[in-house]
Length: 319
Length: 169
Image 1 (cartoon, chains in turn red, orange):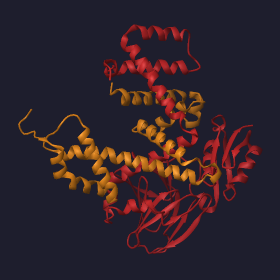
Image 2: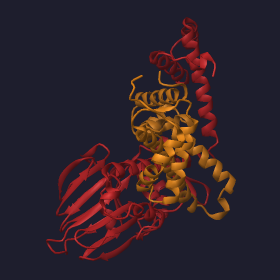
Image 3: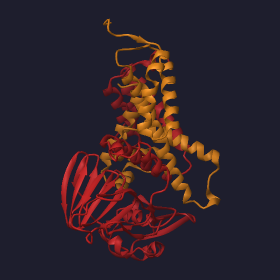
Image 4: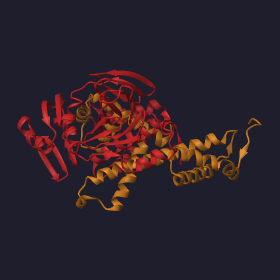
């Protein structure tokens, strides 16, 4: 490593270099941008070094990202994997792996195997568990039954689940672990869904005790909360969180981008939405049984059309 | 240097702490074989360090190194899992060759390591910027934030990458 390579630059200098480079990429540059940049670079050797390093770094990053065959997919994979990684760390911090009292290898082993209950894209599944607990899994979901007895322990591995223990004995307790926390319930009906970076819990009937990031909260019927790294917070909704269990998607001023993402959960393949139309809004009640029919109908209600590159790759673009 | 700071040979570290480290890793990994591999890797890292291991708490050094390896391991398996899921949705005709798959996974791992520690919105804004084809305004629209925020996110990510590459400024 040469001396220049090893030299530490002041953070302010690096920040300035970054700001200049970003301005260069921006559409509204202001007058004489190139001249002002040249002037800045010439003013101090540190400035020039910071500039060169940044160019080099961005070249490296560009080479790296250009090696991804499908960029959208790459982005999705990174997000998913990061959530998974954060979740493992969170689990470890909460000491959940060991607190179960199972052999240490158990959780990992189970994650290698498939979940106890699972659904493919577009599928829903209902099951009655010991203690008269009704479980309904939504599309692409996985649920483990980690302990049968009192309390009944479940672990939502991915996707979305509706739990109904209204028919259970009043003393019957159940615990549902999700990626970002835990729900304790007795005689309640509630739905939990995993999102990137948080778990969303909606209470239909009864009450739940929620735990996340060291916080506790008593949630009542009608409430929807987000559990995340930073604790428990109320969620704002453009999408009815319980309608899926009736096979419906109920949107209230939902952006098209989210609508498409939502439909994507119910079908196989890659479904994308052009950013320029992602902010179009829609409201209404949609049947989830045939997402492709819903997609095909979109051009009738919004100025959009569908483009497909292959059978599994579909994109909604401006009409 | 205080007199109470002994120097440890790698051999004596191995003899005294290998069993403990293996156990420590097994509790976190669950799989004895993987734990043995990572314990081995940890000592290889210690060997490659240029400076000798000193201090009265060599286990904290070992667990620091092991923790880094553990996160690498988890990151790789998280990416593999996400990748396999995505591939499972492809009809066979569109599936990339094993070699392409391997290369893509390695690239993803490099990128993930580079961007680790950034918040998800920052990472997403940066990746969209990096992948090209979108203006800051378009990225802003897609992520539901302002252009100004996108620019701030991209700058944050660039500084983060700079610090990884050239050391903290």
